[in-house]
Structures are given as structure tokens and as C-alpha cells.
Image 1: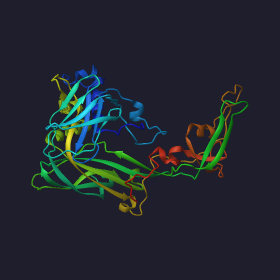
Image 2: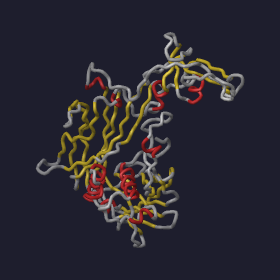
Image 3: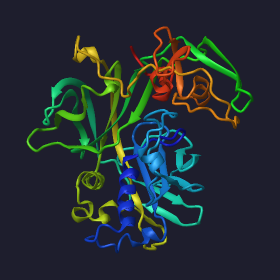
Image 4: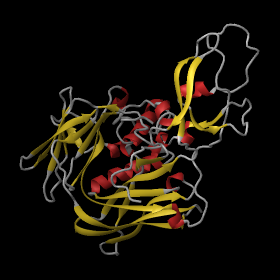
Length: 443
């Protein structure tokens, strides 16, 4: 869970999984002719969803990597915000030139806002009936051009709504639905993406906090320090976390129903998921896809859901709609979409759907602890007689592990100290989100 990284991306995550399995050599039934170069030279990965919504457009460039970073991919780090930033290992493609050209010769240039993330220099929206080409020149001089990009059609996102339901697996929770109507062109294929924002309230927050200064754990005959209990200077009781969707959600308008889609399930949240404990918001975006884009994301979805990844879906289905400009045969991964987009946001509280019922549990066990205020000097060389006490308060405060909860009036702990504390994640919401209210937030 790294900060200041691009949002977690479904495409790159699944492609990384595929390449990782290739590198292990555990799958024998796959013909590797089309991807054998993965192990010799990283492949370019291009990801872009260019829309008709006027705004800054984005192109993400990276290189394929078969490595698995266990620290950032699988391990919760209590010192960093949960659910913020990428969880996959990304090799960014830097120093590229990116531009979007129209069939009539118009050009929009992109600049590299951060490694691998390229933004349009001016806001714009795609126009219906216009043909576009994405062009990329890498720092090594290789040039690439996309297949022609066109908006297939347009559809309105009529309504997003939440209902209390029990799913097919017997799990009770909240089902987010979408209703849509086709407006023009070929708008029978839809893809949904969403961003969830939820409120986090630290259950053991206190208006005071520890302040440790002048700490020398190696001083003799005992450590020197100044430990104070002072009013908090930073608001860290209430936070907000925003997480993008990580799954492929697509819909096809069924035959015989005209031009409407009703009660399409976009997202299911179990009732015991802490993200809906207080207040929750979801921003749903609906993209109208052409047949090729729909097929690409369907292939991604099958890759992520089947147990036998390569026996059912061949890697050619994941080849991007981009090629070397000089005709050289080279695999490029990812996909570039030209879509029309509609969006809606809704809010709800847990009590709106589960009135008077117990709230979902906090995702971490929170128990008050206590321990001695100080400890034996780190540089003491004589006999200590053994010490089975937990880390001292000043050690934990120095490491940023704990937050203050009060005086130890009940004498809790195996080695009681003067104060009680909890693990920081229980008293400091900034480990789970941002302590500023989002601009769009409504109470």
C-alpha cells in the first residue's frame, strides 16, 4: 500500500498475474509463441479510457513485469493508509511522447504529470463521428500508433440506487443498481467503473496525545526523555478514504427489452463490511463500448475468475489495439478505449438500510494496553534479571505504534504503567484515510 502512486488498475493487475504465472513455468498447456518475449524484454502496456466528457484526459504507460512484490502486494503495513494507492508492482514507462491525432489532422499533446502518467495539455472531449489515433514515441525511439478509435454510441445513466438485499450466496448486504437508456448509435455494450468513498471514525480517539522529546534510549544509567500528554494538534478522529473499483463490470442490453437496462447489479457490499459503518458514497461511471473493447474486458474478466487461467483464454485476446508504426511485429499489452460516459453519485448511511441494527465491526481488534513508561538503557551491559514486559511507552511512541487513551486508573496490563494506549490504527484514522473532507462530500 504505497502513497503517491497511481490508482490501482484492474488491467495492469490482471496482466501482472498472467505474466507472473508465465514466469513460474507452472502452466504447460499454453503455447507461448505470442508471449515468449515477455521473459526476454518487457512489453509496453498502454491503458487509456478517452471519453466525450470535456476534461483532462489520461494515458497510462508501463512495462510488463513478472515479479511479485510481496511487501506491497500482500502485506498490510500499519504505518501507511489502508486502501490508498497501488497494490501492484508497476514498472513505469517514462520519457515518452504521447499525442492524440484526429483523422482530419488535429493534434492534442500529452505531458508526463508523474512517472508513467500522461495528461492532456488542454481539456477536451471526444466528438461523435470523429476518428482518432493515439500515437506514442518511447524514449528508446520506438513509435506506436493505435487502431482507429471512434465513439460507438451514447447511453444515459438514468439512476443509481442502493437496496438492502440477500445475494445468491445467502449474504445479506447492500446491492447497488444502475438503470440505463440507450440514446444514439451502437450503445448495447456497457462497462461500469466506480469509486467508493467512506467515512472512518477512529473508535479509541482521544483529544490528547503523547509528545516525546529529548529521547536517548542509549543514555546511561537509564534513558533520558521528556514525555508529555498534550492536546492533539491534528484532527485524526474522522477521515475519508476513496478506493477505485478493481473488477470488470459489464452489461449487454438483452434482446427484446428495447433500449433500457433496469436493475443492473453494479456492486454488492456485505452488511458487515466496515466501509458502510458510518456514511458511504459511490460514484458510478457508465461507459458505452464498441464490440472490440467489450471483448477485451470480457477476456480480462475470464482471466481473473477461472482457476485454469490459460487453458480457456489465449493471450492474443489481451493484445492492445496498438502497433508499431513501422510495421515491426511487437506485442503491446493493455487497451485504448474511445467511449461516451455518464456518471452519478449517491450517498447513504448504514442506518438508512439497517435502522437500529448493530454497526459493522471495526476491521482491527482494538484493546487498551499499558506498559512501563521507560525501559533499560539500550547500552546497559550488566545483568538485567530478565524482563517479560511489553515494549515501554516511550519505545512505542518513538516508533509511532501507539496513541494515548488515558491514565491507567484500572491498573490494566501485565506490567502496568501510568497511561493506557491502543495500537495507532485504533486511535488515528489517518492510517485508513485522509483527514480532510472531500469537496463532493455531503452529510
